Length: 98
Image 1 (spheres, helix red, strand yellow):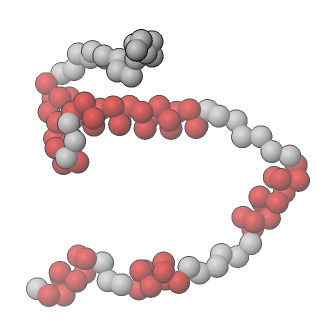
Image 2: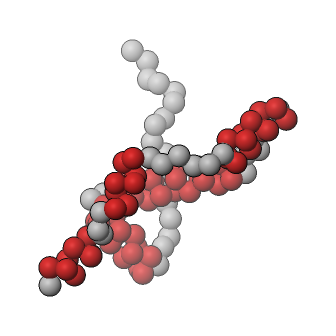
């Protein structure tokens, strides 16, 4: 079988200050990830955000009007969220127990 011409892995080299490495390692450890996984995920997430922020969304005037009409409607309560918001926060429970 022939080798695939598409590579999945592309090495990337960066020079970072010790303080930058320390904070990245600390965050990666908190997430249970390796430095490489953490940095890849952070870079890809940021790249996706930048692309989304700079992507023009086009719609017809009718579609835009329908969208605005939906936004202008009164909100409907979501029973699960209403119940969740009635519960005391964890720090409130802890403070009451002390």
